[in-house]
Length: 114
Length: 114
Image (cartoon, rainbow over all chains, first blue to last red; front, side, top):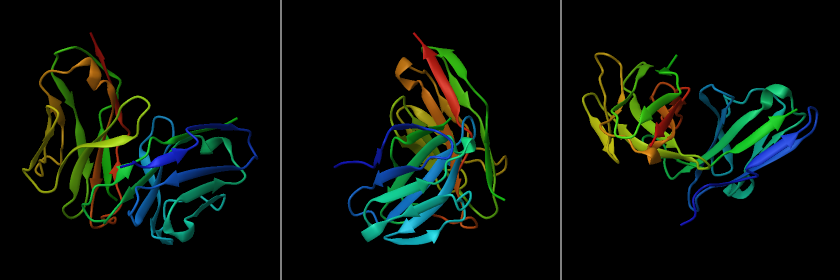
């Protein structure tokens, strides 16, 4: 069974440009999460989807970030326009349930804004 | 609010040495505690977990005991191998912050030398 896959694995863009990250969750997982790790700091929650609905987007930094999950399958996270402080590793995770159900993480997308 | 504090790395050990990575937490209610590991080039993987006080999680020779009196969940291994080189993240889930949401520490990089 395929795990959580993220594309691209690395992205280097200039300040002011737009970048779109993609996450394909494990098939059948209704719950999808985005997290971010800024260099050397903790991994922080960004948002949570249940199917195509945003359940909690309290961790989204600002309105330059837009997450979508059309049809409740894959998800995209767009940053527009990108700023230097957006650099970091963006992780996606998925799970069947919530509570203490294990979430499975992708390998992350390393975003560098120069 | 809820938070996780873990020892800063990097931690460098020789093969077969004893490993301890300290983790303490602050949380209201009764959180569940986790250790995740990220091997080079891979995603986060659940290493072990404990859901209530005095529980011991164990996997691949690693152990951690949920200590409510000291609010700690230290990771230990009696004899590390080169293949254990990775970044280790302590995390919690708490009903007060949403049981779907992980609160992570900053991560501790472990390097094991042959």
